[in-house]
Image (cartoon, one colour):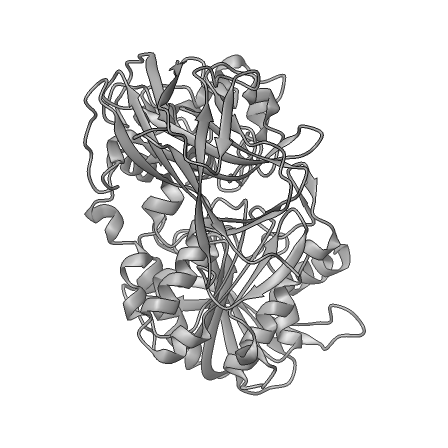
Length: 590
């Protein structure tokens, strides 16, 4: 890696450089600081990586707000160039060397179109363009696809959102506070890539420690606590707290039917953008504008967070969990841009990793054909509070109605421990043992008996919850856990619903205090084998801070709310209020 980095630093000092990454690999050349004109006169800048031999090559484009000279950004372009591709790596508008004003999400569609059409007519290109990149680099591919650039052939967006409001900014209407603040304020707009970790150091003053900054009210002035000035895009996010025209204008899920090229989506079961990975595949498979796009769309999901790894959270998923994303992308682009018959079209379109047994399996589609949806009912007595309570789960519907009560105090929220989070936020992500928070009386814990045979689940998880609160709004936070024989309790799916959004993210409808509502809570998808000897568990509470902002239980606007009230919560189960989690059962692994 040091050798690669040194070579890159030499290359970027020259307008046109010739480098050799390793003696055993092909030489490449780099054209540095290329000017790319946008339709409004703004110029973006990037580097072009090329095979050393002159010629016209299939061309790949990737665009980043994190800097084309960021450590690691050159690795894939070098390897692609060594495999016969031209690669254009560009700073997004308003970032680093590129001109213009940086406003996240807003210019990526038209800029993407202009970049692709510029690249297609350059002397190094044969006119066939593909795109790749992860996270924000995946988002801007989705935005570009909606514009239908004529020379775009195939895309590989990884770890990316497809609806900035519904599966980036919020989950179930609850604001992803630690991520949005860390990415939107601490890293943006002037101090991009400044880590948040310093806020957690022992020497940091109490008022600058991250968890205290995130407790600032109102949220709408929280940017002043870290950035020291008003961050306009962050304030816009908070003020547009429903899925309104502001968000619909940049939602890719509104545009699947316009997109006409195949897509390969890649994600992780614990990634913050997992829902975007799945929605992208399903949306393109069912709605894309052409048969080629529908048939050519693929998806792979591993046991990862915001990037492939062997271990995540507390679990080592073994070496089998690792794949080469580069090799997967290369096979995909070789098929679509070079016409190499490498079997890509013969493979099943979905490949997923089953946790529990740590095995991959190819599937015909998503949802997996033949899935049986099995309700697992909340059961037990009236004291399900904490691990010491009497909460149970049963595959048989309880005939007798019962209720469990707890108090949710926003001043003492349940702290984030694992789950679908990412990116330098001061919270843990992935499968972390939940027992520390399952000790709390404001966490309801429901557990099955020990399983006598394995149960294989793969698909979207949903919770049907009958519940009441004594105020106009609150949150319902759900976790589905795999409990090992030694008692460790690992989350494999989570979901949250801000009650005011129970009828849709595009409308706010406050509650009638004390009224019982039937809530449907969408949770993250998963693939897991609950082994014999394990137990299945559902945890229910009303907070997960600082991954999500604290619901103050008042129903006041997100940006301006300051008043805090304690909520008295009631969860019902059995009888005519059969709260249950819906498990997608699939065929056992061979």
